[in-house]
Image 1 (cartoon, helix red, strand yellow):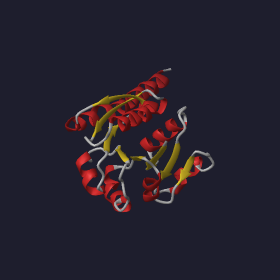
Image 2 (cartoon, one colour; image 1 turned 135 degrees about the vertical axis):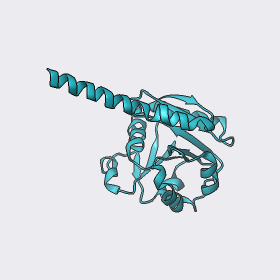
Image 3 (tube, rainbow, N blue to C red; image 1 turned 30 degrees about the horizontal axis):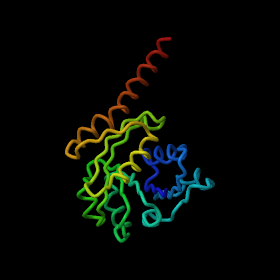
Image 4 (tube, rainbow, N blue to C red; image 1 turned 45 degrees about the horizontal axis):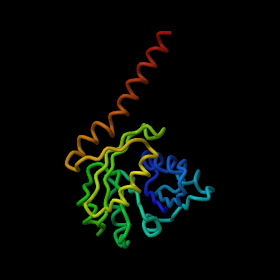
Length: 189
């Protein structure tokens, strides 16, 4: 299966690392606007470091858009000329609706996800919402990929703001609290 990831920041790198650990054979196409973030992956045989987001989209059947929402305009500008026929676009961008992605990229098959930090160790919980054009087979493929980072819960897109606040950010807040408790414990002896 040919899978693309645009954006190798926190979420994109979690996806990439976990996909590399999957048993099913994947060919991974990756792009990041800061190319040095791709250096650790350049020598891996099943990873192709691309020179643009458009190249990722042209090569992959399932494309993960893992950029920050504030970078969405630049991303859309870079990939808007790609023919997305038969491709599935999976977005991790908070606040960017399926409808916006469909309209901006002229794509029918869109999946919106909200992964979280425990996905680093395969223990995350990811909220997922599918556009109506995504087939059952494509849903199964996306869910299989997301299984690499933990469990998935299908939610209505209208509930994504709550999913983002609770699931997407919640574990990170807990980690901060736990770190503070550890620091206090160490200071107290």
